[in-house]
Image 1 (tube, rainbow, N blue to C red):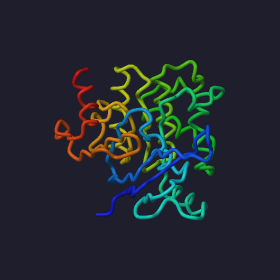
Image 2 (image 1 turned 180 degrees about the horizontal axis):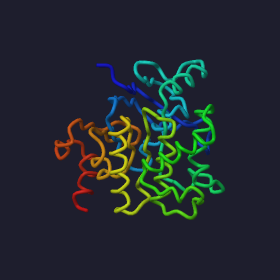
Image 3 (image 1 turned 180 degrees about the vertical axis):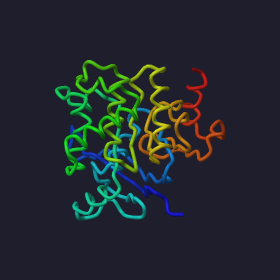
Image 4 (image 1 turned 135 degrees about the vertical axis):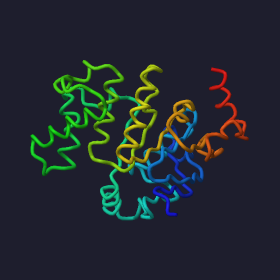
Length: 260
């Protein structure tokens, strides 16, 4: 069976700021696959390379070595145009941790959600876009009375729901969730995880959930891998067997959750 997303032997490095002749390796031979309609988790501590890997999957940076395939088609080639063509064929979105910088503070909530609609579906009339926005707010469980509000007038949980509404506006097949709930209170995290789970089922979405929080990942995901210092340490394809991880790094993260 052909996997929806295949990540094959990805390496990446950055020039060191203090010495541009030196390189810092941030990803080392990372390979995994994601099946359509599943949530795949990547767990690791700060500096493990999680977010760099996410930016590569979104097409924001090109890997130093290796390749990524969506439905068998390679994402990165020598011609940048072909890369854009692929990502428009398989629309992707993202929800990040910092909802305060993800939304323009001078925009109303309606304008924030309307922004991708204007760019992606320019043929829609103003009234049609407003109908889409109202449906998106309904999807994420928010009142239409918030349309004229500004980000500072909403709670953190409400703003992250707005970011989720904006992420599904372009009807994506794949959404990257990069620490998408970690900045919120635990009770709000659970509500948003339930929302993401329901949207995944209703809209047939594929997720990559990146987090340092193993509890959140196991709540939403079907499979996961542990990433440490840019290296794939261990994969878990059956979460009922999570307690049987063998690597010391995986055990340490798991024990931290159990102790809590």
